[in-house]
Every structure is written in structure tokens, then in C-alpha cells.
Image (cartoon, rainbow, N blue to C red; front, top):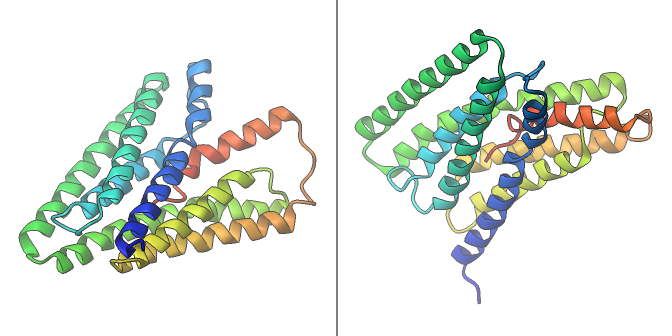
Length: 244
């Protein structure tokens, strides 16, 4: 009989795969940027926020903070590297020094903020339970901040009665990702921090699917160019929508 720990690890591996797919969702945007050698109207803010989010979750999953959460570390480490690559591409093709300067200042501020949280966590709290709670508050807080992305998209869907800017596959992936990591947080080792974060992610994903079903028939037919552009706009901000 498979143990609860083994089931948890299997679910975590599946979650890693799905989350990796979500981390890759901005790739079409950056392929477009590279081809055009211009960042156009795309913004770097979602990627800056995701860098901070990944740093907190990597720290949260370390054995010195949360026991037996290495799968949280692995996927967020991968996500952190990918987001930094996206930002590097953005800076390389940004024609305005102001944008590059803001990216640099944003990353420096995040490093300082993360370092402060790490020092306080390790020096002021001497048990794993207290460290988990303190570090987890910041991880959940940034997840909640990043939920602003799907809220804006959902508002647009309701206003236009069109799901043109909310691709179905991304909504399904977001909902599945939230459900997988919610299950992970409840098996073998109960983790209220991850449960809170991913429970909210599941609800937002479900809301997107309900909206898609409600407004799919009222969505006007678009040209292939329009569909591609809509997907890129959504994908460019999707990494700010769902994170473990």
C-alpha cells in the first residue's frame, strides 16, 4: 500500500510539471519581443513581482523553515531562473534606459527586502513552526497581490461579454495547478500556508472557467492575428496570476 508521504510526493511532482508549464507561459511574448527587437507595450512588472514571489517560496520551502517541502523549492527555483531570464531579455530589447533602470532598482529592492525577512526569520524565531508562520505570511501576501492580474482579466470578460483575452487552456491550467497544490498541502503534512494560497488560486481558476462557459457563445469571431495577440497579452501577465 502506498504511504501518504509517497502520495504527497507524487502529487508534488505533478504540481511541479503543471507549474513549470505556467512559468513557461510568457515564452510567446518574449519570442515576439526577440523577433521585433522591441518590448513594445509589454510591461516588466508581472515578472518583477514573480521574482519576489519565487524568492519567498524558495526560502519558505527550505528545511530551516519548513520540513519536507523540497518540491516547493525545486519548482520555485526553476521559476526564479526563468523570470530572471525574461527580465534580462526585456532589458536587452528595451529601447529606453528608464525601463532598464527600474528593473535594476526593483530587483535590488527585492533582494534587500528578502534579506531582511530571511535575517529576521532565522534570528528572531527559533522553531520551525514560528519560522513557517512568519515566512509564510510574506509568501501568501505576494500571492494575493498577484491575484490582481486575473481579477482585471475577469472584469474585462464581464464588461465585454467576451473571453477573447482569457484563453481556455490557461484557465484550466491555473485551476488544476491550484487544486494539485491544495491537495499537496493537505496530505501527510498539513500546511495551512500553502492551503490558503492555493485554495484562493483554485477559486480564482474556477471563477475563470465559469466565466468562460458563461461568455463563450457571446464571444465574437476573431481573426488569427487577433487571437494570437490576445493570447500574448494574457500570457504576458499570467505568471502573476497563479503561483504555488
